Image (cartoon, rainbow over all chains, first blue to last red; front, side):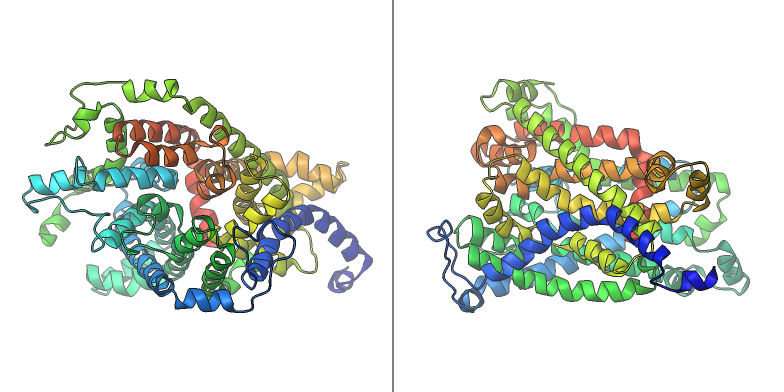
Length: 306
Length: 283
């Protein structure tokens, strides 16, 4: 029996494999057709000239690297890459720090900890469009609650144009995105925390470690796998954010919140230069691809790959 | 301060922690309170300074106006339902067997398949949007609800596959072995034994597939052009462009858009939270 199982290509294996393929292939074919094919199509598109006049013609002229050269000459591309990085790193750091703080708080068992923690997840589930509009309202200069409260507390003398001022707009969208991401970070880190054995802390106390020593020497090192996955997932999910910024600022004012995703959308569906939109989307893809490779290497040890 | 806190007895500590966490939760959840309160105010009260935390004049005007409007909310609601339910059903029909296949059968290329699902889950909408727009145009599927349905399913299929795979892996294999002895074949062992006992996982992944499609803006806004085809997310976006700062009306629309999400959350809370923590760490 052992021998048969070890032989990978025994008839039993082939039979099992066939059944397995029957289960897996429909989903796989669907994904290859609706995601794999578009990626290839996008790649081809970026080397052709497809705009509002040529896109219904059968033959689309091949233009080589022209689209890439043109988008690289457009200063907006560099701005959008920089903004995407700022947006991503800013959001991840805020939601990670706050999420970790909340996870530590809710990990102390007290009466309302469970239901409250559950309740906070709601902000993660609300459709992004609604979140974006809600914060747009709260940030607004007339009737916006944030300005009203700050003025009431005499912290500012006149309303700040949170998302209509190019100096504060990026900060404001980062804050909104963090509000969405905090519960997600909190939940994952709570799971990580609950896996740390309490005997470690008792041993630490016996050895005379204070609260900070216990946090840095026991909590953080034991949380490392959870922290890594939160950060990488946070990076991937934030890097691709589109609706939030699209609805709140649409990249403005003066490109101050233009992300690669909103820039690609604008090129394709406002200016109808589909090839240039495809080129920008490909650059975004290339960056994400590198990060994904890193992520895959990270979870290689995990059971998911087993 | 620190010493004092540590010297409190358990009961006092409990009270302090409760107060602190309730205070934090109030700040975090304030925006949700605000959207509800604002939707019951009239347009003048929205702009009064200082703002009122409880509507002085409680009005349902923002809600009733949604139903009398020419492009009324009912059409958009049914479009959203059609998109979300069909997309959910379609994604589950494809993804549940795939998850089972990847969990239970030995096969060549398994690692590659898992990597394909993992990476497609990470792809930005913006990458797929332009090529899919042209593909749907060629297939004459633009302005057809099928376009967002199919594209939304590309988000939920990999999610369902990866989460349910770990779920199935955790189930004892002996269950199916004994089912087979009792006369089940591979397929009936899957449908009669595995599916019923893994219902918490199915409910969770189903709920998320629904929520993804329900909340999607990019696909429905890009692929659906005529107003009567619009989903709720696309309508509220257009609504903002048309009416600008009628915040009470926009907030009311937002509340109606969030309502199904809140209902799902209330009824399926334990599945959703369990699923979030499980799936995301592993997948």
